[in-house]
Length: 510
Image 1 (tube, rainbow, N blue to C red):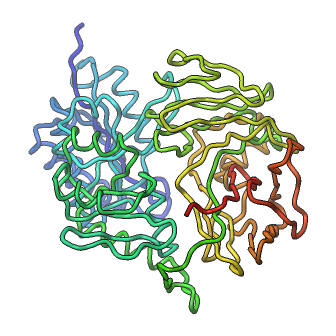
Image 2 (cartoon, rainbow, N blue to C red):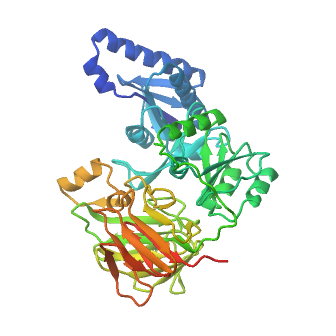
Image 3 (cartoon, one colour):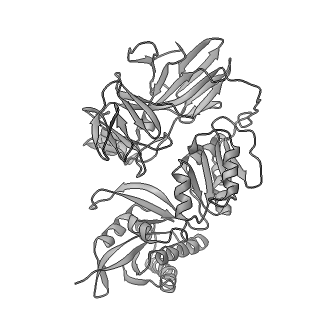
């Protein structure tokens, strides 16, 4: 029996089990009927076929991936109006159609994707991503997943309905910290706060006006630049994101609503939200994000091994299909694997996928710059040192905090969400940690981790967190990591290590 290429779509009622236990038979019948009244007309109108009813779920088939996604967005748009809690998931691939039913890997994958899909969202697999008309469908990646019964990792994507916008974590954090700058077309950039995140709004992707606006900004980490868009052609998307910049996908109304919602979560304190900048003030010290610290494993009977991926803009993330390299830490030590061409270690080029052990002093050349690995002690396998543009200027007499959510002025640590970079130890302790949302970033660094104060020529580092330790790696010699138990004098060139973050103390450039 032959196969045909179809886009397989599952719809699902969110919290169906809870509704069953809390609803009588008449109410349950009404819920299922409302589900059918939402799904059937839209699927049929878009050229799809409802193959079967699975109680709280429908399986549908479409000939075209774009039609399937348009139908899913129409369903979620109606859901956004009526309030019916639904989730939809799909993928595109070969199926066998037998007596009005469908079977095959695409069906299995779509079923696995919907098991990960949150209520109110539309997720789809790589097959649909390849087959759809990307300029017609607003979409974004939600990450790479290991799915039960599916070999390897799969990158999963999300279609964005008109009434929703999911702010990327750095933009969400910038709203909370008060350093999000919304630069609209036709407006000049204002005076920028420390570590700004720029959201460019109202610009046509790939337009001269957008290029002019970017060129008018001071030199920033590309990761600090975000472009608001809803529909964007693949060429324009790739050109923008390949430069290390980000996208905020949503209609202007949805983006406004998402930012306003994020602002509601901010707890304002008197005098803490106003930043007065004097362009005549010159920083006396710079705190620079300059690397990745690698805790040793096994870690607390929870983590048996883990990895981080390096992006072209110098950021370390849990997992990405666009990474330059991947560093992995096991009980044997740290290794690095090239994820594409252009990576050399010790002057030797690595083949794509080639993995080598990291020795003390190893220098790795990438498109993101030169990385140096230093083997460590005190619970760490080592640190990877590399300068970045993420920095905070400090003037004499000023106290600057470090941490995941430091008080102003402060340098915020990365707070990478997701657990797909972790291999777990067996046992209940690891199971509880996994269920509780454990990440190395959150377990090893506090919201307010440490404080740096500059008085004259003296730099003092004070730990602020009782359970999460702070360390210093001294510039003179290699004496290993020194745990900071109380206020300690540090010098220019020293490195502060806390959790997975490395912060350098630098003399500001003129």
